[in-house]
Structure formats: C-alpha cells, structure tokens
Image 1: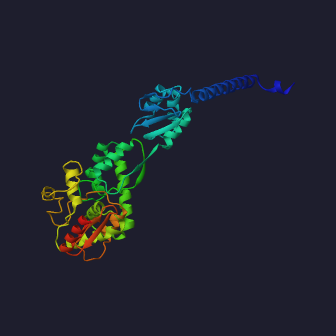
Image 2: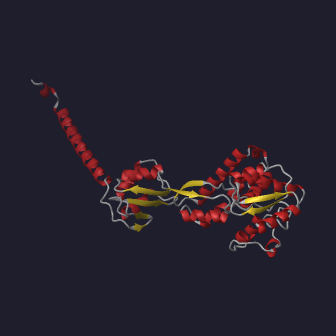
Length: 360
C-alpha cells in the first residue's frame, strides 16, 4: 500500500479544502494588491488653471492644496477626487482608516503626477510651502500686519487680533494692551495661510530670545522695568539713521529723563498722527502737532509714552540697554543725505547747529 493510501480519507479531504482555500486566498490577495496598485496610481494630470475647493493647478505641473485647521481626511479625499488628483476617495479613506498619522493643516505644493500615498505622505509629514517674509526694523504693528497679509501668510485683521489678544499678551508678561514693540523685526519663513496666533508667537519668541542675547541683565528685570527699555528702544529705532549714533541718542534721552525734561521725540508725534489718528505720514510737524494733548506726545508729557511706538531691532535695543555716557541733552539732523546729527549740551548750541544747517 502506498503512503498516500495510508492517509485517512477525511484528512485528504481536509487538505484538499485547505489547499483550495489557500489558493483562493492567494488569488484574492493578488487581486487586492493589483487593485490597490491601480487605485493608488496617479490619474492623468488635470488641465492647468483649474481652481476649486482650495486646490489650484498651475502651469508648472503642480497643485497647490490648502488644508484647513481641523479638516478631516475624509473631507480632503472628497476635494482631491473632485479636483482629479486621485482616482477615488474610497481608497483614500481606506488608507486613512488603517494609518494612525493625521494630515496637518497648512499649504502644500504637490508635484504632479503623484500617487495617493505620495500625496498623503506630504500632508502627514507637513511638508508645507514656506513664504519668505521680511519685517523691517522700525515698522509698527499695523504695518507688520499689512506685510503679513501681502505675503500671503495671514490676514492683517487676523494678525492684529492675535497681537491684541489679552491671553497671548499675558502669556509673555507684557504690561501693555498690544504686542507693539515685542515682535522682532527679522526675515521669517512661514507657511501660506498660517494661523495668525502662531505667527505672532513665533515673532514674540524670537524677540525675547534676541533681547536675552543683547541684554542678559533683562532676565532679572520686572515686566514694567523691561517695558521701559523696550519703549525707549522703539523711540530710538525711529530716531536714529546711522547705527553709531543710536547709543548717543539713547544717552540723550536718558539724560533728559534724569532731569525730568520731556523727551521731545518727533517720532512719538508721528506715531499719534499715523497709528492713532490714522492719517498719512506727515512731511513735517507743526506747532499744532507737537502741542496736541496725548499720552504719546513726549513734547507735552515727561518721561516715556505708555507703550512702544515701533518694532525695535538689534541696534536700537542695544542702545536702549547700553546708552552712551555723555552730557548731551540735544541732537539735530545736520546732514540729511548721510543721516548725521549734531549733539550738544546746551540749547544755544542746539539752535546754532540748526542755523548752520540751514545756511549750509
């Protein structure tokens, strides 16, 4: 009797059934794998110029996809299917169900053609478009908001709302009603359609980091004491034109405050006109301007205004914390093209410098 005949018939039948099941399973697995490969494969690239549901196709063969805060993977799949970037959202939903990682909000540029897995990988890893935004030294909060909106980072209104948010301000211990002066002027790289609150916090974090580097002694200051230096720095930022004169100007303002003399900064009056009153930047100031009653008018008040008037940069901050030690109480612009000032100890010398400049 052969070995095969020694195997009981029931077992032979069981082996046959199992073999058939395995064959069917392998066949179905191959079909599913082939179907997955087919569905995952990128469809023919849609025509450039189409724009709908937050997805824009450009002439470079790429798609700009904007993912909103809290948007579900299911909703994204519908938009991708409608835009023709994937064959079917059913396979997209299947991938999303089995993968634990979530897609991230932001703006993405996907080079086409791209498979569903490639698109999802970009959205999960957060490989967003970064916009280069330069905030110049000495600009105001309102101007900064406009720059952010023009760059496509966030709306000006949203940025201002975040910079005036009481919880955000309190989280940094700032004793003011806005973040004016506490956002560092620098070049940043933000994603497009970035949350305004995150942008404000990034700039504030950078500010406090830079202040710590410029003036380590600031770490031991109270919020009010630090604020006084920031206010002064914001004034110096708007007054100096040549970097080596910033510390001297700061020294002049320190000397004036020490003898209870008004700062008499034209920059504070300009701030009232442009930022508080919303008028165009004046070409020159008149007596009616410097005589108006306002807490920011340092011609009619003694000491510092209530808050900063601009975003100070490194030079102005360093000058505010480390003023030049001089006896000067006055300075006057004497070389407009070079941005040079004449510094003097007395009012008579200050007036004579003005007369010489006019004659020159």
